[in-house]
Image 1 (cartoon, rainbow, N blue to C red):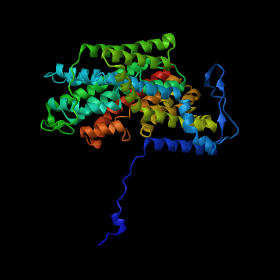
Image 2: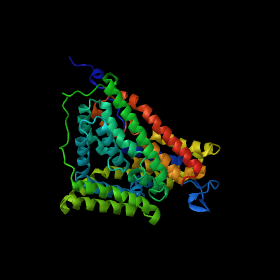
Image 3: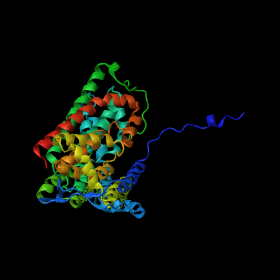
Image 4: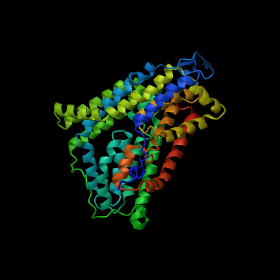
Length: 466
């Protein structure tokens, strides 16, 4: 007998929309707002034409976008963000060449070999390595490939799956989120805000180191706790008889790997110095990456064809983030066409005009902390919020450096818990930790990160950090 149609139908599970769908929704909303909000404009600050005069807002003639303006906004977004888009493509390709030399994998295996029988030395060294690679933004989504390797290490040391996540996802994000020299976040945000790329290095470096140290202490305390009392483990100690799939082939760390690693790290330090000394920018950053890739390929005896293939594969891997930049930038293209960016800034800042700048800066941070769940990629989030946040900062008397820092902190510090982050959820799934248990365990650390970030923003406002 046939079942009733109502029973035969499966209930559709709620699925979070694809990032492109979310961003497209924002583009549609922006277009609608050009018909709803009055057009308005601020005049440039007479003392600094790169900023706006907070007392100069006036309403102007309305100019809602047409259908063709809306349809062409994505192309316009890519054109507007072309310097960022090309940097993403080039960086993806160049870093892939360095990765394919096997230097990073060999360094990790060297740590494991040298720390046998030395209890927690291996996890600490491993944490530091992934923290540094995260701070340089060499590793982001790629952190998932280290899960099987770290699981093997944690089994050997009688640790649990929580430790696996601490040594991979958290170690990487502790460096990646407050990075002082990350071109995926700092570079992009500062380009949009019209600041010298990687300017304001010192405060970001101090906060990055502080977050790294706090996170390392948090991890080591938990590891010592469950080694003393395995029953204190959140998920249970990893069993020795459990098979682990996907463990990469072991590599020997050679002199070539050491030279390649030095050739990768040193130029970044030089670039940070040259930003202020020679006013270097995006072109020079891409040039540094190019020279690093060529150097790594030559030292590792890669043929020109092999280097070209690595570059192509790396560039292909970042096509989606590159397209996200165009989609996200299309929002500001539509808002600019309708002359309502300054109107939005005007209405958003009116309630904040009477509060202290520290409150405004921390508020921007908290807003972006939660908004990150809708736009987890820093590239897309930057082009969604920075065109509005930067002039908001001008009106509220915040430096653009402070605004960039607020957006960067908000973009990064929630990444280890948001359920919309593909890398985060992949790491959690591969480690076998239930999402609810992970959030409950890691929330105290996230709270510490937020307090550090908020304190740094208060310092930035009080000192006029620029």
